[in-house]
Image (cartoon, rainbow, N blue to C red; front, side, top):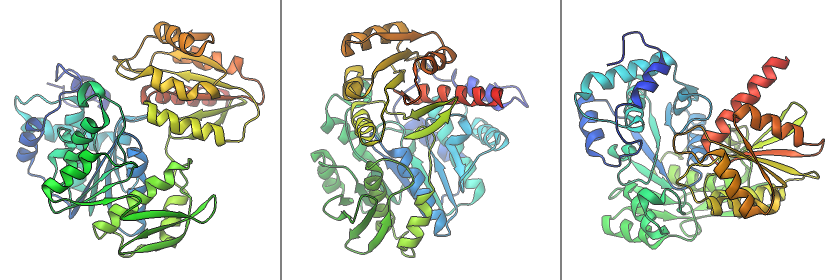
Length: 429
């Protein structure tokens, strides 16, 4: 048992020892502990699943609801800089004390039920949200959907952003099998939105089988572009004209926003929303590690957590469209269960120099092995950095005045590099 008055860092280290597996899909353990907690549930609980775009969608959903006067809790994972980012109440990350108190509440009723790190954190988020007496909880699905810990909660509506190949070891080796798992977040008689295109047959079939109220992008709602930055949202119940592009950069964010609006409309949460409210809520939105641009140490940095082929293709499109005259140096770190070939291939035309780094996760590919694979695939030499500090130094030495430094491949790569950049900036100030 964790000692009394232990700091959050000790709690987090202890949680990693509770389960022999980092990922252990199944709802029975979470449902058992959740029942013991006897938490008061909110009027609305929304689940956000999908392969890519979940974090952005949760952020936009929360911003829109808060702009409409709702008190909102948002649970996401993994974090970029600090664990507290995972549990947010009205745009404020939970304090160490609040998280520790929630962990203590879970531990008080857990008994001998084994929980993974993610399951424990999901239950703790619910404890924090229940104590805050919020109007809406938004829970990001961690892996898949059907057997993910977040699916132990009964949603009033669900969003599936898109489906592509990722986490194949646990979810399946083809899009339809993965879609079957993600379709598990839908509920009978409840609204569900699918924001991607094309729509996997498994999504439609499951919705029909359980009589979920499925709404599809391009059919039940659609985007109309007025210009490069202006757009309109059209659905059967409501229309929002004169919308500005979200503050989160990338063309794809408009489609993420469209799916978010569709879910809020379907669940009755958009009744009082106007184009002005939507623009105000979304225009200033920023997320660390998602198409994030920084100027540090005389170099231009671009950080994006793309960690699968679909996300890398979107990142490649963004790099292509961005105005840039110089070379691109990429720092990359990848987990071993990812399709490295699929992740790197879309970036090859846009990267001039590569630096391999071991991501900060036990499942990460070692830098030397990653360097070898990238060199073989790209036909270019790839440096292997022994540490985050060394990777940053390599990149800064290679970068000329007009060059940019890309950091990508994993949350567990972008987060440590971003922290190192902050340390470097503080040491020079």
